[in-house]
Image (cartoon, rainbow, N blue to C red):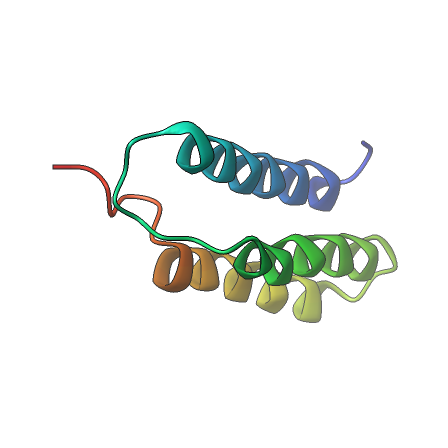
Length: 81
């Protein structure tokens, strides 16, 4: 954990894991499939590798796309009233 990309992508991945675990044991009405969590998890790994290799623009775009995917597809705040 030496670069900002390491910290940012691990934080996003941890958020995705917490969201999945919360929904898997909670009484929410949100219907999720495990496959919908794979794209952002894989994108975090790819963005981290690209950022560490100096491809900053692509890594930042991929991280932004990951956050947008999480917001639109996974809807982390959909269960709140």
